Length: 111
Image (tube, rainbow, N blue to C red; front, side, top):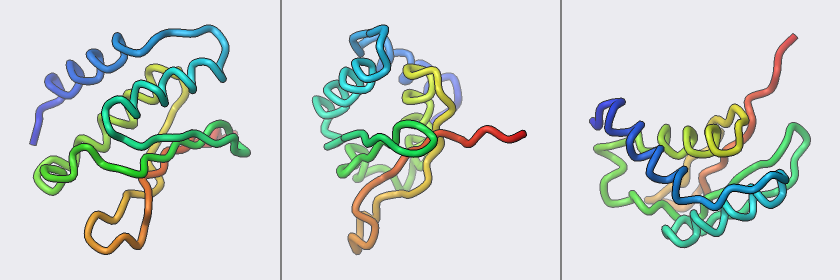
């Protein structure tokens, strides 16, 4: 597995490559453009607790079995860039296509 230091460096490389914006909708749109340039086939949807982000393609499909921490890296990129606590709620099923996308949602606030 990739160590945390390498993952953090990858996260930072992603984040500094995304065009910043002040408005949340623009942030999301810039994020999606960046991810799609990298092959994610990403989109976002308005959802009850905040934006829901879907990846219909996994650019890491060939190595994901040996490096599942790349999913954590994706969640970190979303969380840090958007300053919201995202977590992955579904992972694309690369073998049987039962789950058509990776889904990331905001961690619900408790209390």
